[in-house]
Image 1 (cartoon, rainbow, N blue to C red):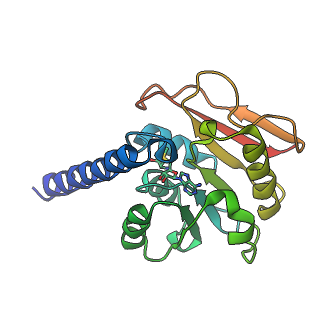
Image 2 (cartoon, rainbow, N blue to C red):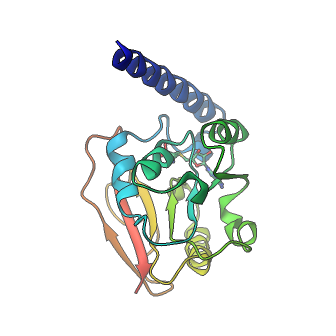
Amino acid sequence: MRFQNSLSVEKKVLRLDEVHFIRSWLEKPLATGAVMPSGKALARTMARYVDPLVPGPVIELGPGTGAVTEALVEQGIEPSRLVLVEFNPVFCRLLRSRYPQATVMQGDAYGVQRLLENFEPAAAMVSGLPLMTKPIKLRNRLIADAFKLMAPTAPFIQFTYAMVGSPIPKNPVGIVAKASERIWMNLPPARVWVYRRG
Ligand SMILES: C[S@@+](CC[C@H](N)C(=O)[O-])C[C@H]1O[C@@H](n2cnc3c(N)ncnc32)[C@H](O)[C@@H]1O
């Protein structure tokens, strides 16, 4: 009975998250970048690239309603280590209520260097930003700035719905890129790209 109750609570939360997402997509389709939050299979694939034993903050860019955030916590990342940078104030409110120990920053992830200059080197950066709608120059600048904020071996983890090609061009700052298998269980199917210093 209790199990059934918790299942129905989870379903209700999911439905609410979807409503928030659809509303945000209707208002700002390009910035929201998806009609629905990422599914569990995609979120878990992203989180698996983060080693909870590596010290330092774990930065999430574009956490939305927290689908990947939840997977990071399941992966063993303490919520107090999470730094969530989100543009949408409604999503920020939701994240603050769900993860009161995390640092939620309402702001533009493309200004991450200035936003996070006083933080310790990050253990990983996880991004749900809709990069493909942005010019290549901006994407290159984002990853260059991201690597300045991260520990030397830390990964930058990004998902994309694109069928081919890396969402970040591969060579500008000596970065090695690797892609996961396509995650068919997500709607739409997606792939995770991981970038590290070469
Ligand atoms: C495709 S959704 C991904 C949400 C979540 N990570 C997930 O997987 O369900 C993109 C998210 O990035 C946020 N976003 C878009 N541009 C942003 C920016 N410049 N700075 C911070 N957040 C941004 C959107 O508000 C949205 O929450």
